[in-house]
Amino acid sequence: MTTKKVFDGESAELMVQGLRETFTSGKTKSYEWRISQLTKILEFTRTHEKEIVDALHSDLTKPEFESFIYEICAIKSSCKFAIKELKRWMKPERVGATLLTFPSTAGIVAEPFGVVLIISTWNFPLLLCVDPVIGAIAAGNTVVLKPSEIAPAMSALLAKYVGEYMDGSAVKVVEGGIPETTALLEQKWDKILYTGNSRVGRIVMSAAAMHLTPVVLELGGKCPVIVDSDINLKVAVSRIIVGKWGCNNGQACIAPDYIITTKDFAPKLVDSLKLHLNKFYGVEPLKSNDISRIVNSDHFNRLIKLLDDDKVSHKIVHGGQSDIKNLKIVPTILLDVPDDSLIMSEEIFGPLLAILTVDHLEDSFDIINSRPKPLAAYLFTNNKKLKGKFVSEVSAGGMLINDISLHLSVPTLPFGGVGESGMGAYHGKFSFDTFSHKKAVLYRSFLGDAPQRYPPYTSRKLAFLKAVLKGNFTDIFRAVFYWP
Ligand code: NAD
View: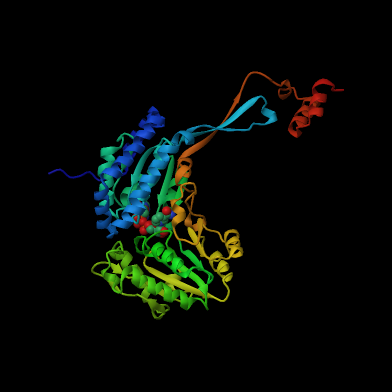
């Protein structure tokens, strides 16, 4: 009988060594290699759509519709965008030089970091694993991907097909949990991108600090939604519902965590949310196939604990039912939850939605700004002044007005957090930039050499230098030709 060797520090070291050799060979830097690997990702996604849907169903009972839109289509379009734009992204950027360096040309050259580590999470286990890999490969790096052990079916699928489709000397998948990630984190990486919670984010950052490795941390937080009364209620509520429960049943980093609205408008908003929830998921949502289950019993129990908190258990105005056997919790709304309740003290990351009420909508800005900075902040309004104030006064990783989550799908926008919700960003060109070192290159010729820059230093040379720095041509001329 053969036993499978555990992935330990030694395995990690050997893996990184191999990848470094591949990187040093220079093969991952060519445009052709990058395109071939990106094309393989596209081919994998196209060929194995059914297996992907099945894996996502096995891990989360994710509805096929959601798997198709938010995972498969998202990866395909990210890959196609990178393939289309890569040549342009790789081109050195010409920038202006200065008078001091005249004659010269200056440019910024994007060079791959080298060997990068991507540690991912379970809620969008295809998208959040493969999308950063697209960026890392587009930028010409070798990569190790560590999917989440909490989505084992997708982790196994990626391990199998990355091995089959990609260049095995440059792209690897390591399956496993804390021991495997710890072994990986002990190695020296050239860049690490981590997606997950902020507690582990700190572990990743401390490990990276040992080697001065730069990190991107894609974390979470409590994403607020401000709802004005002056809106198309039906459209707003439909969008809030689909952004909250129609994306993994609230298990999404950019899902609405809590709503802030005025005391006067709250009853109307709650009624509309109830009406549309019943319309979308039926009156027995536990039986709906359009809602993902909670990923595992730990997260299920964590969410039930939030609901059982004495401070909020009587605040449920919709839902509240659960089915422990199938790990389902129905869309649940809690109105007027106190600030010191459990539900307001941590990221919900599930199908519970808290509503806070204020006298004046502008008060919401202080509520949001008094908390850790969220990954996304949303506002529903037609009021132009309010939109302006929201954008200028609220700090968040990203914001979206009059919809939920859609900003993520725009490849010309960076996606990432700020403060407690993370650092760094990716998507589209930002992914390429995230995995590239921007190397400054100045080209000089042997012409136009100024003897004034060389010792012995004299007051005439100093006057020349000062005149050049000021850009004062008369003084330059005087220092060169008419020095007293
Ligand atoms: P998780 O439990 O799958 O952990 C993420 C990764 O960290 C996994 O690969 C896991 O193996 C590894 N890990 C866990 N504990 C570790 C440890 N002690 N040492 C080293 N590695 C360890 O995922 P999670 O943290 O439950 O993910 C949910 C969180 O991620 C939420 O806070 C959510 O908001 C956030 N999130 C952020 C984004 C984003 O793009 N910003 C996307 C999805 C989720």
